[in-house]
Length: 152
Image 1 (cartoon, rainbow, N blue to C red):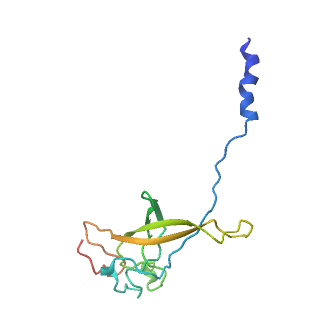
Image 2: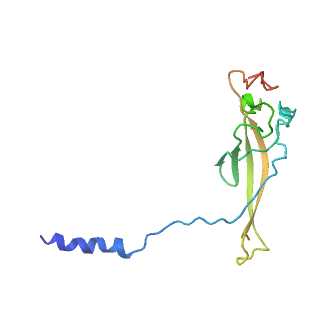
């Protein structure tokens, strides 16, 4: 019977102590132009839609931390924003790849905490490597779509 009188004292800390909540703060914004070329020079020839096969655009559909200041960025399905054939949903014979990026932060000397949009850091992304992905079977896309480097 004595235990029922202790229950309010046991539960009291849960109501008195505020719960800790993690807060996410945006400290920097960085960007790389989507018109840059990646490091896969063998895929630079134009695709079916006329866009260069090594255009950097589309990175960030998948983004993963790889240690230190290294990140891996994966595009979704290549440069398909340029319409050329709606029958194949404008999907080109782009060879999938991932990009290795180095992201570095530096203090922003012109940071003003009272200025909306001002960031305390400057984020500088640099492309360091492009890795083409392959398949054990030949790749084929859409109508007669086969990458020029279709040896795997």
